Image (tube, rainbow, N blue to C red; front, side, top):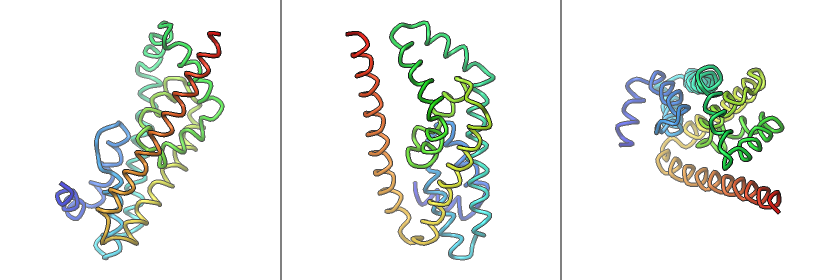
Length: 198
C-alpha cells in the first residue's frame, strides 16, 4: 500500500498531499504524515517544489480543521452537547472538558495538531460545539499545523530514502504519547469525580 501512496504523490503531487491532510482532519484514515514526508523527499530529489509541498499540506490541514470546527459550531454540535449534558454520567465530564478547553484551549488545539495528532479531529469538534472563540481556535490551529507540516516535510526532505521506516517509528511514538495522555486525562477526571462523590 505504501508503494501505491508514494506513486500517487509522485503522479499527482500537491493535490494528493492537500487532500490527504484535509481528509485526515475529519478522522478519516489517511496517511497524511507519510504523504508529507514523501512530498519532502520528492522535493529533495527535485521532482516537487519544497514551498509548494509545504503550502499544499498546510492549506489542506487548515481547511479541514476549520471545516470540523464550523460544522460543530453551526450544524448540530450544540444539540449533541445539550443531549450529552442531560445524561448524568457524562454531564460532569463535559463540564470539565469545557472548562479545560476554556482555560487551556489554545494549547490543546496547538498540541493536537502535531504532537497528539490522533486527537485533532475530536478537539476540532469539541472546540466548535463549546463555542471556543474562532479567532483563538484559528491562531492555535495555524501555529499547530505550521509545526506539523514543517516537521514532517523536513523529515522527508532530509531522510527521503528511509521515509517508510521513519513513518512507522513516528507513528508508534505518537500513538504511545497519545494513549498516555488520554490515560492521564481519564485518570484525572475519574479521580476528580471520586473526590466529588465523597
